[in-house]
Length: 142
Image 1 (tube, one colour):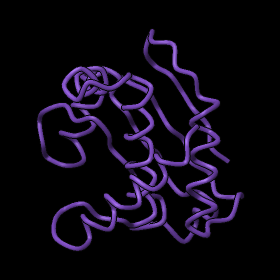
Image 2 (cartoon, rainbow, N blue to C red):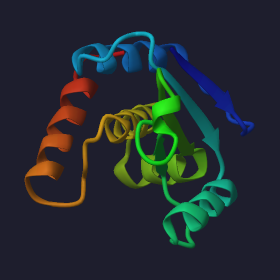
Image 3 (spheres, rainbow, N blue to C red):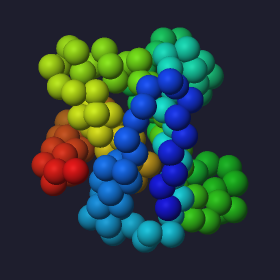
Image 4 (cartoon, one colour):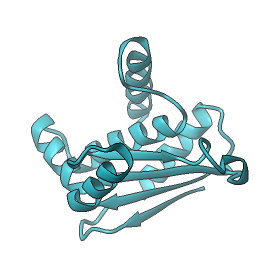
């Protein structure tokens, strides 16, 4: 189950994101019983999270926090994790890449989901694989 929480004043249509997320999970062989929360926030909040959890004191576009790893993960059955998307950064990215805000949010949502599914984007083959997955799921039209 995917839920959305919008902490911003921006109107975000989550229906296409829900469909997209369900198709990504299905495509990756994940059961529908997994719980994911996607939070739309601003640069101030995401910078706080980035600083606290990644020791990077600047805003970023998307953060994913997996509940399937680390201390206590055995007790979090069916909780896949949380995705935080900075709507401020998404807007900046959309302008820079000349795409709509909704298209950029879809890309960031997929990116976060793939991180929750243990895909990495640091370098080499792992980054290439994640990029290919992202392009594939974006091409399915939502």
